Figure 1: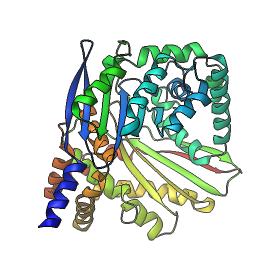
Figure 2 (figure 1 turned 90 degrees about the vertical axis):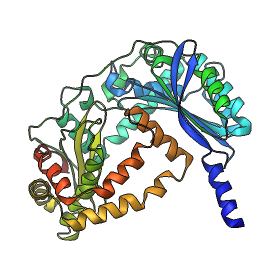
Figure 3 (figure 1 turned 60 degrees about the vertical axis):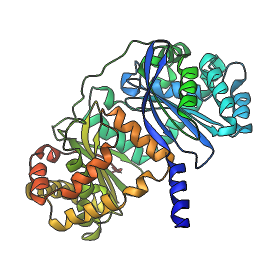
Figure 4 (figure 1 turned 180 degrees about the horizontal axis):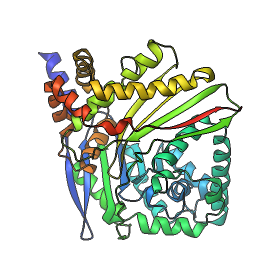
Length: 428
């Protein structure tokens, strides 16, 4: 009994309370994803800005460059001075840009959190807007892009995006290219930050050893420094259904094959749980997936073969890759097409469904072990307009999923057989 009581106390410490709250910041209702966990004296906070990622760039790579500038500290302290303040108190403060969102992350020990908030405020009020900083991050980015010219996985993956989303913001390199970075100006970054990072498009994710009241005060102290911005919208971006093949020759001893296809499935579709199982069985489960079994296990054509469904608010598509010997390139490419066509036509077996259920349900505790995992899950549920606890409800539906139900779903998605390829191969 004593052991049980101790375990219950620990569990209460791990997750004392959580939910979606609202913080009134000067009349603006800011959503806050919150979880109190006193198990470790740490506090983490993330501000996610909707509709502020790479697809909203006026120039390719602008959002990413803005995140790089915010990593350079304040104009007052400079990059080194500000970084020293963070390091001396074991505070982490960084920024990053995705396709749809821009985010700033903060974490610190509970004892240092007030100082962390103070430094966060300093960063927002006095970013390192100097020409010297601009030249520094430009040199860094150009160096990184130059190195990527020999990263064949990167080249092939960019080529696939260019094929699937030609002429759209998703078809551009999120990190930018040499031309866009070399021509970028400090004023463009300042304008991006001023017009994309606002209190009215912010979602705050905060948790750890902090009370709800203190969390709200922390949010108000940071978000209150932000302006109101004009909310931007993006039209839904469809992946092309026209099969295409793009090859790039390079000095390589392997063929890098990236493939993709449209997937007519929206983030709001109630069959999310079925799509998750389908993705897992087709190419997301490693050994045991259809692609891995047919390409590596049975034929030895690649070390690994992988695919997944990418489902965002602004797009949805199938994406996959494999790497193989040069002499196996054409066979491997053709095999991907054959496997997916057969998968759609015939569906899956009861054995595959049972194995998928066993893993997805059995591994659930591992996906919520840490505070970061739980906060991220709650944030995603909110961002994709789902009720809190949605993921756990999906597991119940997966457990009850029948073979004929999932196979009927698969057979309606013939669009994933419209596969395009981006391949980096050897020079002739």
